[in-house]
Image 1 (cartoon, rainbow, N blue to C red):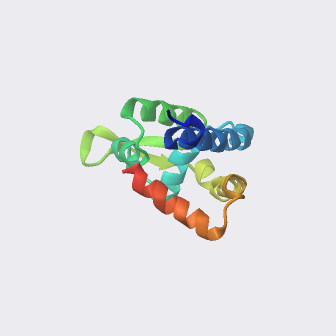
Image 2: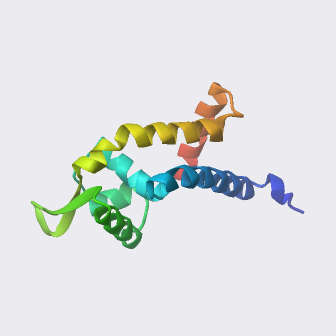
Amino acid sequence: MIDIEKSIGFLLAKAYQRACALFKEEFDRYELTPQQFGLLAFLWIEDGLSQAELSARSQIDRTTMGGIIDRLEKEGLIERRHHPEDRRAYQVFLTPRGKSLEEELCAVAGQVIEKVTAPLSEEEHQTLIRLLTKLRY
C-alpha cells in the first residue's frame, strides 16, 4: 500500500500548487500570470530571444508560448519583430514598459520565494534547488 501523502508525486504537486497560488495572488495585481512573469524574466536576462528559444528555455510548448506572447504584446510589455536570419521566425523584445517592471516584479517574486521557502534553512533551500534541477531533466 502506498502512503499517498508521503509520495514524491503528491508532495511535488502540492508544493507546486502552493507556490503557484502565492505567485498568482501577487502577480494578479499586475494582471500577469506566473508564466507571463517567467517569459519576461527570460527576456530581462536576454532580450530578443526567438519564440522557439523562449519555448525551449521555459519548457512550454510553442502553442502555449504563442498565447503568452500574444497577451504580453497586447498589454504593451513586449513586441515581436521578424527574425533577421529566418523570415518564418520572430524575435521577442521588451518594450520600455516591459523593461521598467523588472526591478519591481523581481522584488515581488523574491518575496514569494521567501514565503514558499520560509520553513527551510539556507542549506535546505540550496539542496532543494539542486535536487529540483536534477529532476527537471
